[in-house]
Amino acid sequence: MIRLNQVQLPLDHNEDALQDVVLQKLSISAEQLVDIHVFKRGYDARKKNLIWLIYTLDVTLTNVDEVALLASLVDDHNIRVSPDTDYKYVACAPEGLTERPLVIGMGPCGLFVGLILAQMGFKPIILERGKSVHERAKDTFRFWRTSELNTESNVQFGEGGAGTFSDGKLYSQVKDPGFKGLKVKQEFVAAGAPAEIIYVSKPHIGTFKLVTMVEKMRSEIIRLGGEVRFETRVDEINISDRQVTGVTLRNGEVLHSTHVIAAIGHSARDTFQMLHDKGVYMQAQSFSIGFRIEHKQDMIDKDRFGSNAGHPMLGAADYKLVHHCKSGRSVYSFCMCPGGVVVAATSEEHAVVTNGMSQYSRSERNANSAIVVGIDPSDFDNDPLQGIALQRKLERNAYVMGGSNYDAPAQMVGDFLAAGVGKPFENVEPSYKPNVKMTDLSDALPQFAIDAIREAIPAFGKKIRGFDSKDAMLTGVETRTSSPVQIKRGADYQSLNTKGLYPAGEGAGYAGGILSAGIDGISIAEAVALDMLKQIANR
Ligand code: FAD
Image: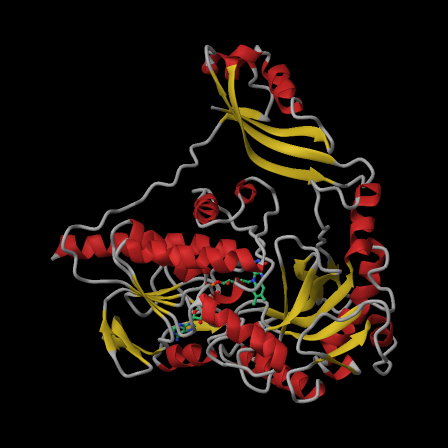
């Protein structure tokens, strides 16, 4: 197969245009072209009234000497042999293997650790503190409707992990030379995701599709001999001579294994504390704090796409913004959800945390994103657990500011920039549920963060017209952009000082999003399988 990169076509090109461009670029006849496979489709919207679709194509040819053809096109850097992107399993479990790896957490990372191990024949046991995704969805929507929080079954905890009620964006900036991201997306498609997630440059799935996909993936793990236990919190990791021996569950049951994967996400504060108390090596990590901002989606669409706004090939527009402040701090947009809603994302009592989600259609009236300020471990004395303490303090403060009933404090951008009182909202209706309390957000974050956001929003208004409009809506607080700790691991993916413990995914500091958590899960599954085979060989 031959790969053509950077194939540029107009937004409204006809069906034959792809074939025409391939024939012309390769100087071949229609009879020699067997198939065109779209590997990737993105767009270039730098000129909003002249938007181009940009393709990466893999073409299958017949009666063509591909070596000679590529040699004749050697000066064209956009034409090369297609790389082998097929996923290859690194191991296969021997017959009669009795030890079973234990996977703590069934977010995207734990899900992929479990799935890949099961596919290789290692029958993992997945231990998830929350409920099955169906039951968890009921608890989460009940919280948004009635303010009744279940601290073990919510946006953060339960089957599917933190990204289940989300926009389901599936892109990441991690280096992925082994095409593990493609394997993640292929498994999602096999579980019911739209096929386009494989090739569009910024794929997303949306909340409801994710729920059913997670159920199908669980069934596949079980069909392959794996086991999944819900409402099963791991309260202790058992360690002897700095080698993991197993785990103790909340009900006192002890499970033995020398391979334990901690894919616990960034919100399992009690589990971080337990690992810290057990002497597992961890260090503080930077994270960010800020607010969610909401605008009308059609305002963002018009700014980004001009007269092409609403074109079905483009969908609802997104954005990505960064501002470097005079103070040296950076403010940036994070987890932008086009046509979505702001959600209540706490897992702890008496705390308010915001995040964003959308459905596949992205058809809600508002666009939202987090506008956050980076903070460094030196802001909290480099103590691994002090970052968590800071997050908790801000979340509890937001709870009180919102009226001590899980409503979130909110303010219009105009009032926030003028350091004024919170007036009733105008054009942009806040989407956060249960509700918002219009107030003064000046006290919701440390002063350096408030100053940085006040400097950044007008600067963002110069990049997206209307971004700093007075009726844009801010809702707080956004504190869980990433994990405040990193549980350090070595080249063998095991904890630096605890053999057999595999810190994994976002909570351990090795992923930042659904796709990268899935990719990390695959790497961990491979490392665990190879180590188990090594142990057997050494017996
Ligand atoms: P998690 O998904 O956090 O999973 C960890 C799991 O471990 C949880 O299910 C938890 O219950 C379980 N657990 C923790 N402790 C224990 C214990 N002691 N015993 C047993 N189980 C335990 N990312 C994107 O890429 N795109 C998006 O559009 C997107 N939107 C988001 C929207 C929201 C509302 C949220 C909250 C997050 C969003 N994210 C998004 C981020 C994404 O969800 C995370 O990066 C990802 O889920 C991390 O995966 P993980 O498996 O490492 O951890």
